[in-house]
Image (tube, rainbow, N blue to C red; front, top):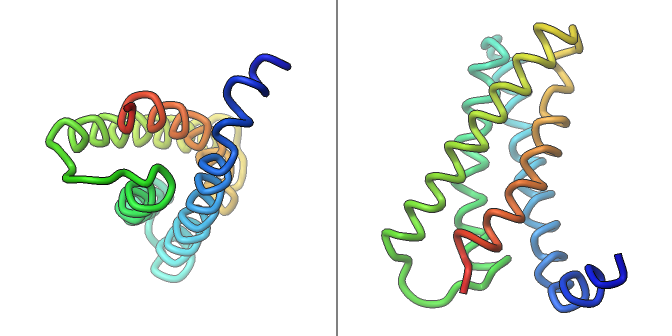
Length: 135
């Protein structure tokens, strides 16, 4: 744990803080869109989570590129491809967790966005740091 703190967390503390800011903003956006689609419009929870995921992912890409990782220069097709791969993986995770949460565990679909966000948050930081924006 000491090694993790010394070698990774402390040198990346400002980036981790920016990641948490972007993540919080994208979570609030995703939560709002999800509840608008689910409660106000009356869409199915899987459709609502999909729309929420798409919108928050687009905002996340912009903020991650420009604020969290402070990526300078042109964005190559390689970065777009890696980010698309991240989207596919996290979308599949989101749908699986959503379905299990509601259909098997019989939990309320109103709070569904919390476990999906938590699982994706951990995966996203690691994937974005070491795959998409690896230097």
